[in-house]
Length: 105
Image (cartoon, rainbow, N blue to C red; front, side):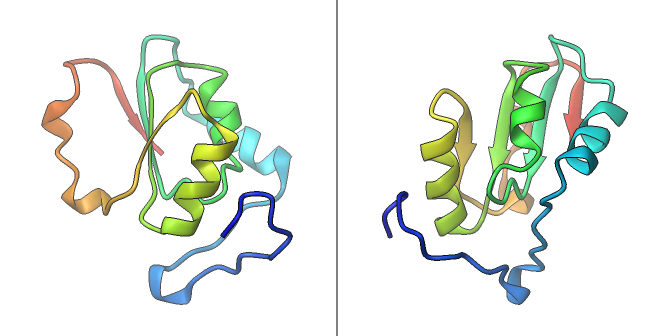
């Protein structure tokens, strides 16, 4: 699938996906975490990046974990300087992160 494809990607019920589209809701969710510039933030299920933009404006210590391969490819194309991992969060080893304030969204 091309990143420039006009094909719409639908949420997969098997993964419990729901895509946020309201920019105000996304911004309010991110702001509620009161992220500091030195915080490490893990976004579980980054989807197509609705909240990602707001998160990476607050910290450069960002990891997006996205299980869906299609969404992972979209995220890598949209946010080339950010760190995304294509795996199940439940299998991700948090111990690899530095000892720092951690926010999980």
